[in-house]
Image (tube, rainbow, N blue to C red; front, side, top):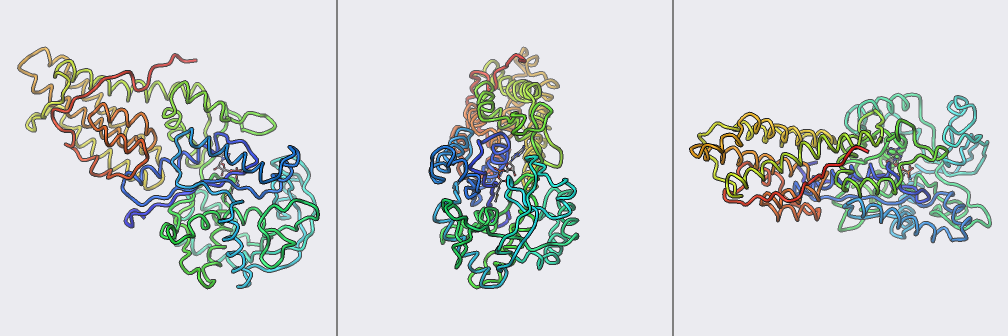
Length: 532
Ligand code: ME8
């Protein structure tokens, strides 16, 4: 992936009926951090998010408000777009499944699958969860005592003439794929889960619903049979392909990673690759390779409790906004990225934890260190970094520490662990603090004979901090741009703020900081807040 210098990252497209909340912002922020990092590396990057609009719920909610589904969807999609812009998301496109570019292409994909026999018409009867718009296999329905675990409402028996996707044909190829490409589904525990379920056997899946008489038309008509519309999930999954299925963008395919949460793993790890394997065999689609990775993170919970509609305890935009206002947007992004549910454990969004992480990592470690180095440079060196003396050993370990931090952070980003990348950068900041404690430039400065040593120490501290800022920039573009500006790298800072392409490896080269560069102290990067 990196070798090809191309990176395509996606988020789920979110149900347009819901108000954006922390879960949506989280996955989208993770994607944003990865996208910014790959742009900094100079790679051709494409970052896609959007809204999933063709659910039946949209028709019902719109009707309840006296609106057409179109109007209601447009209003809510705009809210997601506004929210993402507010939270610093640098997506390259925002796809709405009601857009004609998507509708036309999905009709073409499903048409090709009909032609090849991978999609066929048949009868279906089974347990159906109306809230989730999903059929539930018999075994699972029994396990759930015929009630939806999501809404608590009874499952209903439903029979319909439907179009089906021949998923049953793809069990073995999918198992082979998961064997051959261990990082196709991540984390590993999720891959094992998926393989276990595939081994239980795959049923064909219904991929259409009957268009009810008198209901507003909402959904993509089944090619050749307008009495059916394509089931919302099938329509939605194709967004990843339709958004880049143009002459200018086809080179971005396949996705480097689909970021999702565990709730929609089955669709992405099983149904979606099977659909693509089938489509690939159709004329004109041989370029449709499989995505490289599907990464399913876990869930945010709120103050120790699962978030749910009935509890009304979603960490919603208003709450997130309040955190961003109080601590700064970048502090919120940092918290999400470093404390969130990457891996297989849920994560708790709790105010006390936020306040603690902010104070210890951002205000006391990073902000304080930057201030100390700039302040001492001002006080002892007239504000300008000195030329380091290569023969002076003081703080000499920082160069190697910076090199390690860069290697670790880049490797962590490659394995989709932006939390570890941030940790590597913060370890470097801690190493700077430790070097200051050890070499005591503030004490040495009293002796005029040792000014050269002070200059060398502070140069090395500033250089290590500049590099740490570069590694933290995808998570905190605005604050790190400001830190870089204060450390003589305003132009790079501007590019980072704008989410532009760069040359991260060159930016991180030890020694780029030119002797004579003026350092600025300025107001605290992360002002202290009293614990609430
Ligand atoms: O499922 N913690 O849309 P959706 C972390 N439209 N992430 C969470 C979360 C939580 N508590 N709750 C939601 C759909 N998410 C379909 C997707 S894709 C082709 C179609 C995030 O609006 C997480 O990314 O219900 C999850 O997978 C997604 O929101 C579900 O969004």
